[in-house]
Image (cartoon, rainbow, N blue to C red; front, top):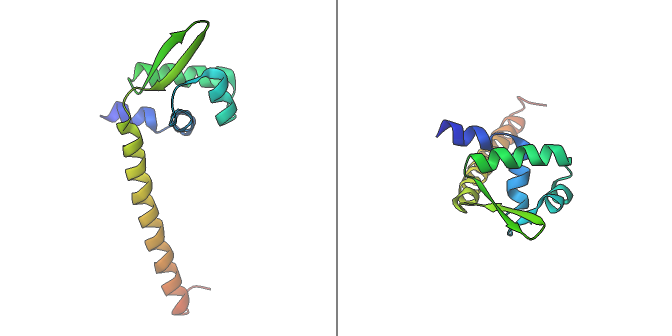
Length: 104
């Protein structure tokens, strides 16, 4: 499990995963969606594929990558929702402190 989360802990790989959310993409499409360089995208796609998070499929001269198990998006949504709640709580605490005159 630690290795799985380690793969997803890199920001560029999360960008690539998000780029494939709406279906298979080739390297050029992923580069356009993420703004990352070709070598960087290829390196991260290899890591994602080796980890079983992404899969690749040859279609004529093109290789398309897709998410192998869509639960990855559910996991990302769960983490994002949890972080959002945490940030909202921290904001409310800061506002309460400001209201008490403890924070300027």
